[in-house]
Every structure is written in structure tokens, then in C-alpha cells.
Amino acid sequence: MATRHMVDKERTLWNGRPQQEIDMTTTRFAPSPTGYIHVGNLRTALMNYLIARKAGGTFILRIDDTDPERSKQEYVDAIQQDLEWLGLTWDRVEKQSDRLERYEEAAQQLRDLGRFYECFETPVELDLKRKKQLNMGKPPVYDRSALALSEDDKARLREERGNGHWRFKLDHERIEWVDGVLGARSIDASSVSDPVLIRGDGQFLYTLASVWDDIDFGITHVVRGADHVTNTATQIQIIEALGGTVPTFAHHSLLTGPQGEALSKRLGTLALRDLREAGVEPMALLSLMARLGSSDPVELQSSLEEIASGFEIGHFGAAPTKFDAEDLYPLTAKVLHELPLADVAEDVAAAGVPDTLAERFWDVTRENITTRKDLKSWWELFANGAEPDIADEDKEFIAQAMLLLPEGPFDDATWGTWTKTVKEATGRKGRGLFMPLRKALTGQSHGPDMSSVMPLLQVIKARG
Image (cartoon, rainbow, N blue to C red; front, side, top):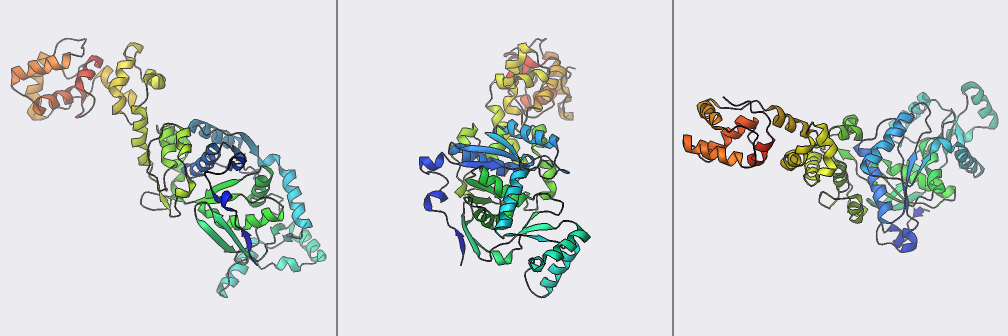
């Protein structure tokens, strides 16, 4: 007999649901405060956020801090700062460390149901059991030998080894559900070890705490990585045993590097705070992550509301998804190109640009920067001049041209007037005229229109 969670047609629809169900939509993002969140975490957070916001529902930030040794307040603060930077606002915060009594209530319910049993094997003993099973061609699942222990046996083992760890007794049936990304899924519970829910030291593990939270908070939709698929199967049985309503699950693909390599070793360099420090714009990151791995093209979006309105979880595939941080910078440049001065005024001022030149400076540089950090180098060029780039064959020409350069301050007509004079004096024209002059004044072969650049130039080091 199969344990089936084949939700009805309306519940499997992630969009276009009736109003009464939309009102109930509740999702959550549940990071552990043991480090900084990275792009992989963001993918999960964003999908859950978009589902809630599109449905007009509730998005919960749940801090999974049941591990007192590794959980740090500094990481809780950092998680919230990173989400706020991206505009992923939550409706409320829940901390698992505040809910330990509730988890004990859930554990007692499972004991009363006969679905919870205490085990005493050491890690070494468990490893030996797994190796023996593999040698025999059997799946390496827990053999449930603890179920044969008498109360006297348990008392003796507690005396010798301390408290045991507690496992949930799975019904050895087939567990089926409809996944929002993967489609119909089926796992034979007999191929999975009874999950440990409480460690011997009394720490509640993720599976029990998460399940009870989802029941208590009325979570209707759970989106997470494909590495949780087996967890989902066991959690469905635990939810049903505790009398909860099984949410609709969706498991997104895992990220890889641009060549398909494992991304896990690089995630430390892809923390959201590092991307922020590198100058990545929030909407560039959100626009990429909301479409990456889906059948929809990656396009720069103007707001989270726009992203949410077009978000479809069913458009995502199961194959590993390639992520290249370099793809964020063209999108970041597009974001900046469209911003008015008011949105970058602080950055322009921080670069050293006087208020009187701020508007002209931004108009000239906005389409020639990749991140806001580039503003400083542009102002240094305008204020202090650049190291001239002069080819040997152009040295005599540049020397003559600089003698013809009018005294500053320059205006919008200076470039046209000067190049006309140089052309008449030297006979040069076209690229042979304009490019050497640009490189002599700016040290660059490309950039903004020189007519607009000239009024900003404060020092001309190339003269002479």
C-alpha cells in the first residue's frame, strides 16, 4: 500500500489558484546562522519570496539556530542585512531556538504513537553496519536493531554510553508526491534509513524542527534544492504522523560553475556580501537568479513586483544550472545606465566630484561604467589627467596639436574647434586625427564623446 500525497489539481497549480487558496499561501526561507548566505541560498530565498508575493501571501524568515555551538548572532544580523539589501522583506521572523518546548511536544507525540525509538550505536558501529550491508549487496539503511532492545538493555546502554539518539520509524511504503519542478516523484521508504530527529546530546535536528515549524506556521509551499528530495519523502510521513497538512514541494536544480564544475568549493567567494562589495547591483542579481535555469530568458527587470508577476516555478528544469558571476556585471551596467543622478548622488560625491559638475559628470560617465566603483577612476582622470598613450609615429603630431589646444576652461565647443584647427594645420583627418588626440588626453582608446569630456578635464598632462 502506498502512502500518497497526490494533491488535488488546484493545489498543484502554483499560479492561477482560486482566491481562497491564494489568501492562505505561506512560504519560508530557513537559513542556518552558521555563515554568510551565498548565491545558492539566495536562489531558494528568492523563489519562496516570489511565490508568496505573487499570491499576496506571507513570507517568513525562519532562523534555524538549534545548533548552539555554530549559530552566531553576527550571522543572523548578516542574513537580514543581505536580504534587506536585495529588498526581500519578510513578514515575520521565527527563531527555532525559541521553540524548543514545541519540538519536545512533537517528539512526545511521536513516542505516544509508537513512531519514535531510541538507538545507541556509535558512529563506528553504524559505519561497520553500512559496510557489511554494501558487501552483501544490500542498501546501507539502518537495520532497526534498536527496536529489539528491552527496557533493561536501554537502561544499561544509557549507563554505559549516555542518552541515545531518537529515530522516526518510517512506514515501509512508497511515498509519492507531485513536485512543482520535478513532477511526479516516488520513493520507497524501505530504501531509506529511519531518520535521526534528536541527537544523544538532546539537540533537535533539522528534520523534526522544520516539520513542526511548517505545521505550526501553516506553510503551504516549500521550495528548496534538489538535494532535499529524499528528506521530503521522510518529512511527508512525519507531517502526516503529526496530523499536519503536507505542503506543496518544489525542488530546484543545484548550481554549478560555468564549466559545469561543482560550485560548493567556490561558494565562499560568492557570498552576497562579497558580491555587494564587488559592486553588483541588487536588481541585476535578482533578475538573473529569478530566471536562471528556467525556460524564460534572463532579462533585466525594473522591480521585484515585475519579477514576481512573471515568475513561474513550473518553468524551471531539473538539470544542474550553470552560474557564472561574470554574467552579473553586464546586467549591473544596464541598471546603472538607466539611473538618474539622484540615485547615485552619494556615489558621485564620494568619488570627489564637485556638486557643480555632478550632473555633467554623471551624464558623461553613466554609460561607460560597469559598477559604481568605476566613478572614482573617471573623476581621477578628469581632475588629475591621465597618462598619455602616444604611439611613436604620433609623437610629433601630438606635440604640434597640444600647442594648438586653447587655454581652459573648456566648454562643449572646445573639442570641435580644436580638432578643426589641428586638421587644418596637420592635414590629418578621420580616425588618424581623432584617435591619437583621445588617447593623448584620456589614455584610453574608447569612452564618452570627447565633446562632453572636454568641459570636465581639469588638467591636461599631455600638453607639450
